[in-house]
Amino acid sequence: MSLERVSCYILIDTNLFAERTRLLRTALGPSLLYFAKIRDAKIVVPEVVRSETIRYVVQAVQSLNERLAGLLRETREFLGQSANPSLPSVADSEKAVETRFAEISRWIQPITHTPELLVRAAKRVLVKSAPSHQPGKDSYKDSLIWECVLELPEGSIVHFASADNGFFDLEEGGGLHPTLLREASDRRFVINAHRGLESLVNALQGDEPEIDHARAAVVINHSLTARMVHAMQRWRVDETGQEVVSLQPYLTDRPGMLYIEFIVDCPVVGSATFGGTRFEDTKMRFRGNGYYDPHGVLTDLRISEEALYAANGSELEVSITEFAELSIGIGEPREKFRLRRPLQTQPDADADTRAGGRSKMRHRGRKG
Image (cartoon, rainbow, N blue to C red; front, top):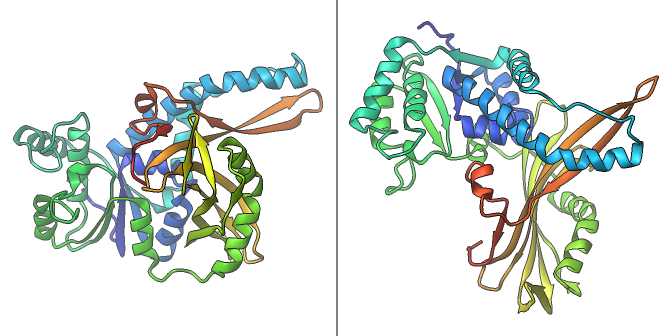
């Protein structure tokens, strides 16, 4: 297989490529595209990652369609029965993914699965060689992905990111599994393994971009005012102390625009109430992200997590919010009505299954 020689290759597992970045549209996706552009790098997309991405998007959109049905009923009450928008079909979702791959094709290095590659991946599963040494439904997929890494030109610089444990040595510091490290060395790779997008982008970025942290903290706190008031009412908090803001900025391909991820901790003065019990020495935490411009304006703000922590660091309550957007054409001429609402889930025994392993509401007893 002949691959284009570039300065480095970036391979992101399906769980990060599709779920975290939404095909490099959100979270740290724009930053990855930016570094691919300026560093003459290619983002490697094996055939299995492409097919798994399509499958994931189709399932995610269908799940959101079901949950949007309630919002549509509410919208019709406001706009009348003439508003009857259609939600994306499976074919629409598949076409959208293919269109996105075409949009970013300049920075993508596809790898097709040859018969030889498929056989090598199967042998890994049979002999329980890393990353298939642990039982799991994704063991063959993980082996396919690693065999695609070994298809890269000898002597390449490789950045590999995955959230799957099979690729890593969990007993010795969490680095790349010794078997995989040896195989990479045999190919004379300079390989950097990352267990998340943040580690990957930080490695590509190097020095942190300049940002006035104090000014950004003020802007973030101001943007959270309404959310904080609501949380105080929810947990019956009368007063909070000085907020502590932690943030991490990342470069993007939009001139002067930074993508920032932040955590805001608000110590509670007095007590907070959860589940009918009052707790002392608690703190509220808000986790989110957005885009920060040179004028100190924060846009596309998303608060993804809102939590109440006990004094010992355990979570009393954590809610995770997903967002959905919906455009509706009304009348002639057609005018656009946009509804952007958080979809906040409730405690549910099946939440882990629907969320791909991540519960959307967690309760007391876990350490933060």
